[in-house]
Length: 59
Image (tube, rainbow, N blue to C red; front, top):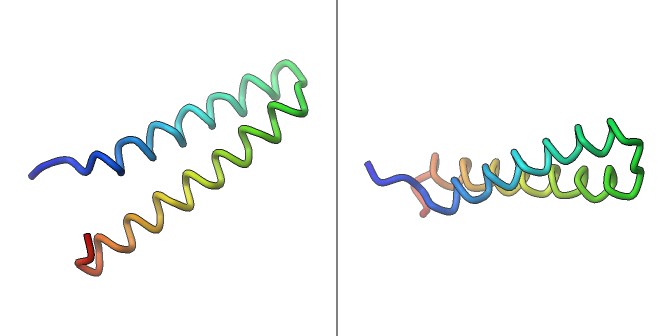
């Protein structure tokens, strides 16, 4: 089974933005916290959409 490259890229974006959330919170950087929070929400939403499409057979 070939890995879904789009899914891997979105998953990496979600992971990096989550790490960014932790780092921004540790240093109290509110601007970076907001940016990484928005990126995390967007990437997890895109990942959920991709999973939903793959479950219904649309690729």
